[in-house]
Image (cartoon, rainbow, N blue to C red; front, side, top):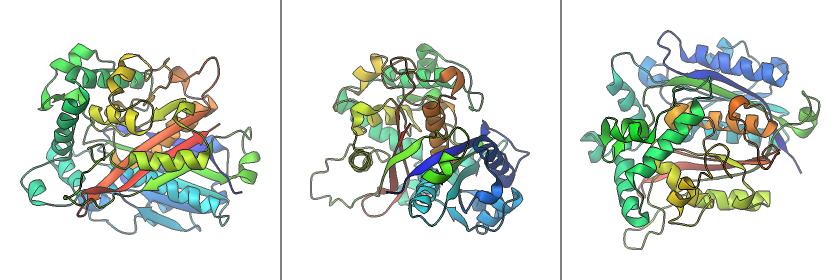
Length: 403
């Protein structure tokens, strides 16, 4: 049976870089991954770049793949551009892994890169990101992603007893994790009380409970087959144990809808059921996780849909300290979207970068240890792009990496 391994990881720090272009951001991440893997660029057989908004800001909507890879000094291999909102990076990784698993390619490169910061004009960033969802009367009247997700969160507060303090704890936890991450957008810790007293964005969410809509950055991973991985570096690399990638399902409004009730999480349970089955493990085997939390309530719901706790016990799991570094199953160890930053198409690849580094023991000050050993299984949840009659996401991704 074919296997695929993450043999190299690279980042361009997330933040605000008005002087840099998309190709420049990507080039740094690509060559950091190449150096990390100790490979030659000529060994890359196929390359995927995830990017959603370059066309919106520059007019260069097509030919992005040869532009990005060519400016990085790569040539000769197939070069493919993918999109998909917040899941774009996950799509690139999924395609790169499938390319290797197919046996047609020995090594694939997946890059996610985004440049969303516009000096003095945050509305431009918000407008660009809005194009990752179906344009409706509501969006034309000003409904944003944060507004949409907040309405879902308020419904779930009633259902599960969540509070604004729970959301503040998520934000404070992830900011604390990012304080040990030199590649993160926000590297300063913040207390729960400071989060609660910050500027209100969409009640009950304050600014620190939300990821930024104006962040630049890039992330890259190299994925290789077993034979290639065995001769690179130490020969010990995280394996892609399973992938579960699904899309939104149509649900008639005449029938009860038993989905969790938040766009980014509605199909995640189905995706993880596939991933767990394919890997032959369960949520009890997960040692750490990276999840999509563009707003803090998404992380709470992720605990449930990933199987880390029963429905209704999300806040209990959080308050126990289990999802904090040092706990049983640390979540968003690099700071997550809220603190590491959320340059949309780069986020899904960055989740793989962090998980791979944790599994091989190179995460530095934020390294997870589980009962005196390195973590063995890392889980990744991501989702993005929305539309259609069911209002579902285009892609809901569940990845499992194992050491």
